[in-house]
Amino acid sequence: MKLKIRTRAKGALVIAAALVGLAMLSSVASATTPTPFFQGFETDSSGWTSATRVASGTNGVTSKTGNYHAEDSGGNAYTQWGGYTDEFPANGYMTSIDIYLDPAAGAPNDTRFDWTSAINMPDGNHRRDFAFNAGFYNDTDATGTGPRYVISASNNTGRANSFPKNPGRDPFTITAAGWYTFQHSFRDNGSGVLAVDLSILDAGGNVLHTWTLSDPSDVIGTTVGGNRYGWFAGSNEFPFLAFDNSRLDVAVGPPTSTSQCKKGGWQQYNSPSFKNQGDCVSYVATGGRNPGAG
Image (tube, rainbow, N blue to C red):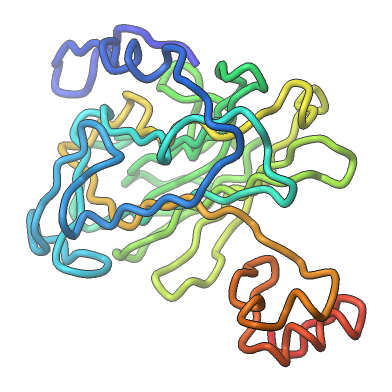
C-alpha cells in the first residue's frame, strides 16, 4: 500500500493519511492469533483512530443499531481490530463494518472511497490489502443510469491505483439508500493458500454480491500471518461517511465429538453455529450435516 500526496475534489490539497500511516503501518507487537473485536460506538470509539462518534440522526443518518455510530472524514479512520496478530487461525476469521450509502444525497460524478481489511505476514509486517473500491456516479454506462454507487474489489486503493467501474473487476451497482455490510472472510482455499471473500450484504443480512481474491504466493504460515488493520485508506473523497458495528469474528468449529457439544459447549461454535445441544450432537452424528441450520 502506498501513501502519497494527491489533490482531492474541490481543489483541496491533502496528504493522504501520511501521519496516520506512520503510526498505523509501523511495527506493532503481534499477539499470536486474532481474537474477537466489536465496536458499535454506543459508549465510546475505543479501538479506532480518527473515527468521530456521533448521535443517531447526525447528517440525516439513523444509526444502524443503537443511538450512536461514527463518521469518517477524509479517509483517516482506521482500526487495528484489537491489535495486530502474526498467526492465521485454523478456521480463518471475518471482519465486517456497516456503511451507510445514499445515492440520493448526491456528489460530483466519480466521487470515491475505499474500505480495506489487510493481513500481516508471520513476522508481523504488512502482507496485502483487500479493498472494496467504491464510487458515486450519476452518468450512464454499462453500470447503470443516474445516481448510484458502483463497487468492485481489488488489492489496491486510491484513485491512481483502482477504479470502481473496472469491467475486469465485476462491478456491482447500488441504487437504494440504506446500511450495507462490507464483509471480509479470510480462509484457507483448501490448499493452504489464503482466499478472501469480499461480500456486500443488505440491512437484512442478505448477500448481494461477493468477490473472491487469492494469490498463490499467499501461503498460510509462510507468507501469511494474522490480521492487520481495517482502514478507509486515506482516499475518502466524501465530506463524511457514516459507519457502525465494526467487528472481527474468529471461526470456531466444527465440533468433532458429541462430548464437545455438551455442558454448553455447543454455544461456542460459529462455524457452523447451532440452535441447541441437540443440533450440535446431530451435526457430529451425521458426519457434518447441520439439521438446525434450516
